[in-house]
Every structure is written in structure tokens, then in C-alpha cells.
Picture 1 (cartoon, rainbow, N blue to C red):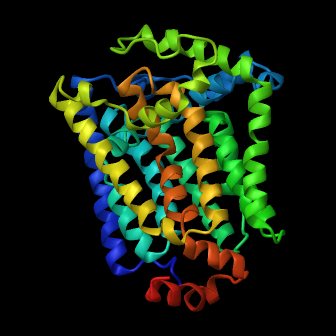
Picture 2: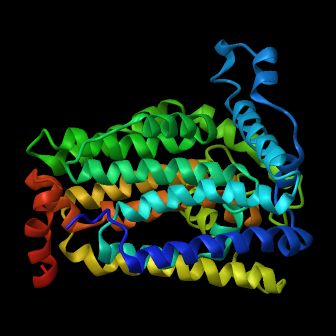
Length: 380
């Protein structure tokens, strides 16, 4: 049986999910935008700026330096296109962006096994995730990029090594929009590809994880300066939190708590300041609790390779992302939208014994049921 086939039940779910997300587009435009800022959404809805104008201003040689400018230009150009198609209706523009993100979510869920897909589908209903990826914003494009790449990595882990133009395009998109995701994604890719070729898989992943810290140590002064350079931006735009980095290298010493809170968002103290903050806190508690439950249910039988591959990739993702969220709860919730699917991928796929067994066996999709199903049934 082809697990990628959309059955009637899943077809209904995806229709409901699409309608739900369209509803979030309406909610975001008519309600949420009146209560809190939705970033640059209005800019992307109204803009007539195009990539063609950008190419007249900047040379290709400046691409790596000006990646943020290019990501903004691409999003504005897409917004301008939707503005023309929808005759300037902001809700229809938001639904256009929502549809792009929905494709990434669909591809990701359909790449996952049925049982795992069910609890991931529930996590996909997270209100903040759907709000931010259902309005005119970069997050909608990033969710599409990340969802497509995660679907490819799942196929790769299942020994179905197929990559197409869309996956290459999405990899470029991630590099342009969120270059700090690259270390985590590259680590996962190399663990899967290189690990397949060596016998001592656990030694490989532990050694590679430790070795990856060497460049971080060599660049410690630059990373420290970047962290202090980020702080004024968030502290100067309505943040209720105090400066997180005080002493030199605090970006490293305070990373463990910062990585957690930078993903979680609203603190317990902040949750008492209003209903929106309380709802955000409860949502984060449910998401983190569900992920911990997924992890704890299988950690006792998790191979060393899977444990360290998951920990290493998760660590790189959260460390690179936490400076953008630790100083402002709203920013944390917004920016985690982009890498939420990658976090789900790590917990559901990399922290999975069944996927490891399939990958190590060298079998493809045809042999998956014979390889994995007995272990699921026996509970080993």
C-alpha cells in the first residue's frame, strides 16, 4: 500500500485544515491585527516593489550579504502579485500566502507514517503557528520551504533518495530567508547520508557533534558580538524584558535556558498580563508537553545514533534561533513558526527507533511494512 496516497479520511482532514487556515487568515486580518502587530503583513499586502527593481539596485556579488534584503524583496513581489490577482483585498492576499504554506504542511504530513502523522496533524492545529503562516508574511514561505525539505529528508531516511527541482529551490529559499537553519539541516542530511556508509554510526554522530563545536569556539567573539548587536533591535521595540546578555560570552553561558524560552515564548509571569498572553503560554505548554511525551515514550529503546543525531540537530537549530526570541515573547512565537516543522521532524523522525531500523536495514518503501510493523506491534 502506498502510504503517500491521500485516503478519504486524510482528504477530509486536509480540506478541514485548509478551511481552518483560511479562517485564520480572516481572523488574523480582522481581529488579531487589531490586538497586536502582525509584523510586516500590511507592507507585503500593499507593496508594488518587485525583484526586478532589486536587481537594478544590487549586484549578484552582494547576494550573501544582502540575503535579508532579497528575502524581503521576494515576499514583497509575491504580495504585489497577489495584490493584483485579488484586486487588493487583504484577506485574499493572506489566503494566497496561506495556500503556499499549506502545500509545505501537506507535503510534510504525507511523507510521515500514518500513526506518527496523526499526532503531528494535531500539533499542526496550533493557533499561533497557523496565524503567522496564514497571513502575508515571510513565515508562510519559510513553512513551505521547511515542510518540503523535511519531506525530502524523511524520504532520504527511508532510503528513497529522490531530489527534484522543487527541493533544490526550497533549499535555496531556506538559505536566503533563514540561513541560521542551515547548520541543523546540514547536520541531519550528513548524518543520514554519511552514517549510511559507516559501521560505527554512533561514534560518527558523537564525534561529528563534538567536532561541530570547534568552529563555534573559533568564531566565539563574532557570535558574541552578533548577539549583542541583535539585542538593541528587540529592546527598542516595546520589549518588556531586560537585556539577556550582560557579560562577554553570555550568549553561550546562558544558552540552555535561552534556547528553551526562546522557543517557548511567554513566561509564566508574562502570562498573567492578559488573555492573549495566557493563551500563548498555554499553547506553548501543550506543544512542549506533547513533544516531551513523544520523546519520553521511546527514549528507553532509542539507538545511540538517533539520540545524538536528534540532540545535535535540535541544539544547533535552537541555539541559532534563540537570540531572536529570548528578548521578546511575541517575537519568539512568531519566529518559531518558521522552524516548527523542523522541530516536529526531529522529535517524530530523528528520535524514532522505527525509522532508524528502516534506514539501517537499507530497505525501501516496499519493504517498510515488513521491516517496521513487527517492531511496532511487539512494542520493542
